[in-house]
Length: 196
Image 1 (cartoon, rainbow, N blue to C red):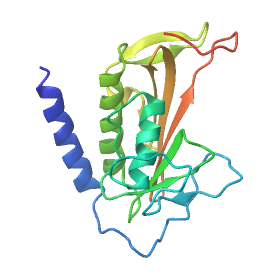
Image 2 (image 1 turned 60 degrees about the vertical axis):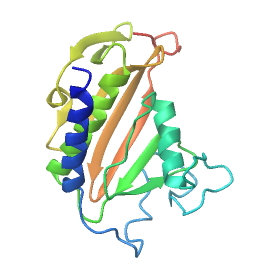
Image 3 (image 1 turned 180 degrees about the horizontal axis):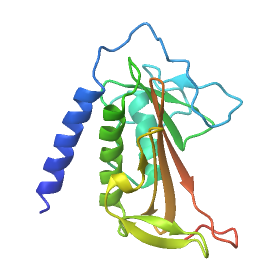
Image 4 (image 1 turned 45 degrees about the vertical axis):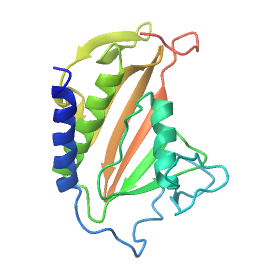
C-alpha cells in the first residue's frame, strides 16, 4: 500500500503535466497578474536568481525557493507547482502562491492539480482531510474525495487539514490563466490557533 501512493501521485502529476501543457511563454505575458491577496507591493514573477530576502535552495532557482517556503508554511514538504506554469509570488504574502499557465485554465487542468494538492495534504495530515465544525471550531467530518470540497462551476476547492498541531485551511481557485493557492490559519472562538 505504501508503494501504491507514490505511484498514484506520479500518475496524477503526469496527467496534470499533460493538462497544463503548452509552451513556456518567454515573453512574460501574464507575469504581471497579482495574486488575489491584497498587498501594497505588486506581485513579481520569480527571477532567475533569488532576491536577498527570498528563501534559498540548493538549485539557485528562486521559484523553487518560494515553493519550498510555501510548502513549509503549509506543512506539506512535497508541495509542487503545476507543470509548465510560471510561479508568481508576493513578498508580503508568503502564504499565497499563484501559478500562471500559457493558456486559460480548464476544468480538467484545475481538477488534476487540485487532486494532487488534496492527496499531498491528506498524506501530510495525521487527521486526513476534513470539514470544520464552526461551533467550537474543531475537526468535523472526514472528507475522502476531492469532489466533496470542489466546485467545478467556479473552479474552486477548499478543505481543512492538520498542519503540525493546528488546523489549516487551503483553498485553490482558478481564474483566467492562473491558479492561486492560499493557506489560512484557523482560529477558535478565543482567538487562538485551532487544534483538531
